[in-house]
Length: 262
Image 1 (cartoon, rainbow, N blue to C red):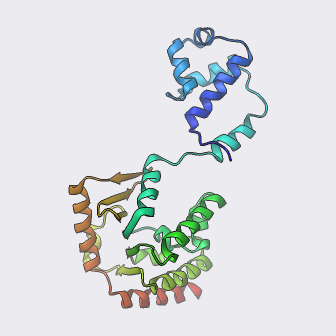
Image 2 (cartoon, one colour; image 1 turned 90 degrees about the horizontal axis):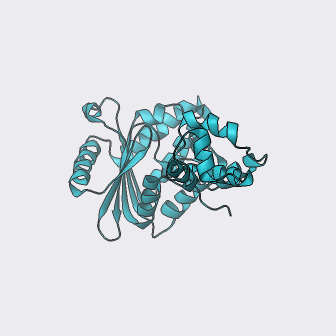
Image 3 (cartoon, rainbow, N blue to C red; image 1 turned 135 degrees about the vertical axis):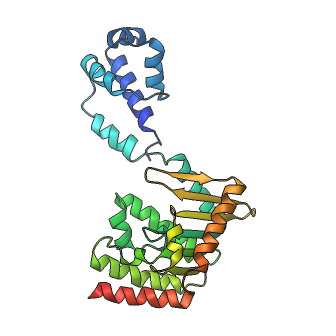
């Protein structure tokens, strides 16, 4: 299996590999590209990214090996490191006794069918990992309870085409009948929609401590401060209070699913 590596570390290794192949010292390379010896050392160690203005200079000085593309795939793509926030959340998810999810844009990851998830994700490996998370967390008897509140627009937003949406809502209805899934839909005409914010999740860990995750446009954020989690809890309770009952939500999901079949 390829070792885990960051993009900065990979670029640093390639700079060092090319420099040593040409028998250049760090000092000689630094002098040629008009930077300090310590900056070259920072590049090669992966502590600092190479700024665009230096890339062309490096390419002019160093000769990179033809099989660099192979190494990009093996070391950088296959060995890509999870962002710190994602790794933390996945660890919290595994240890959770309860999960509380609020979504306004997409169906919760754990409730996505393969066709829907494939439209959202960028690779087959990501799809495989997501489906494995579903199996591990929701299908097992000892798994956590998932309380999911979603905006009605999630049911109507076209993700992957009509066929994928039809299959997704059928799958969502199946999930909603599980004992460990409590699914509530906030109707699109509810006044609480005016208070909607970014999607978020809260995990109650086996220790009793809560950890939250908020979804951003560029990256997510792990929330651990009790006062901030308490605020998210209050928001979740407000949204759930204005949502349809479980049976009504299931009826709406099935009715909307039929519309996608037309």
